[in-house]
Length: 186
Image (cartoon, rainbow, N blue to C red; front, side):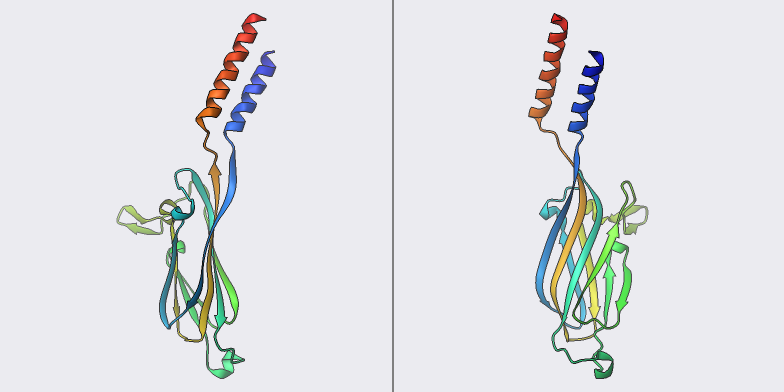
């Protein structure tokens, strides 16, 4: 009898510790890109991310480019659509793509639970932590007027801890009390 009661208690405790994976997405569409600097950011707190209960596993940003005028081989035409990316996600890492045509370019940042995710330090304190603040961003620098951006899509992969409702805890306590009463009568 003790074994069954112990196994039942362990099973009920494991049910209360469930967690599940979730991907939060956000997208913006149809941008014209002028030469110079453009920035795209999102605050995932507005779309359901909660840094107190969620563990951020990774973030991906997809940029879908389109040439406004397809003028053939850009090397011969002299219209080299060059884009340089600066990611606040990645500690201001820089990446230059020399000849962007109609394509989707994606960037990812991955974190391990408990890892330090600060990307900007101010003396001894963290000045900007995207995982704790929920604010993710990327900027790009272009040298052409022949590119448009059809879509910027963000995907934040999280593990969300299931928060127990008070009624479930009450039912668990009542069930244990009833088991105790039944045991005392036997």
